[in-house]
Image (cartoon, rainbow, N blue to C red; front, side, top):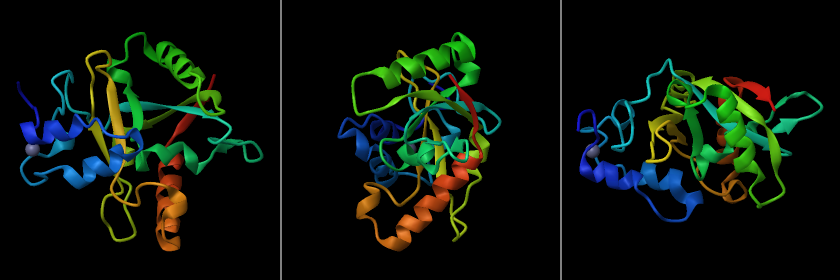
Length: 194
Ligand SMILES: [Zn+2]
């Protein structure tokens, strides 16, 4: 298989623990940052190719937490999953059925019985815009990995580089940094409502 990460990196992306710890697990366990540049490689055999910076990627948005009704724009919560379960995205280049199909599956996903969420729309951004976001220290704020699955070859994940987990449990300074990072990613998003 060409362009594939090594077996130990691949096993990290095969994570099967609690979903909300996925992002931190990936960052803590990627064993060979120096050997495999995982963003520039396929992380699963199902991936058609690594995610290029110019690719358009799309995440699902839902009510009430992703929408500021007064300001008529996305809230920073639209980027929240990057710090917990990974912000799932669909690569438009490989999305079967195009945007119509992606929006339909977002609706279906959000309507699954859970929490008190309802479908809002989809947020489009480029992989490169997420990859370009930096912490105040100059370090990367997010990685964008291809995380293709057998039934979803267009699947990717935006994963933060720090400030993981339950927001309420973070020190105040970390909360501030995380909110800035989330806001920066949200600003990159073009939103389309259902
Ligand atoms: Zn590796």
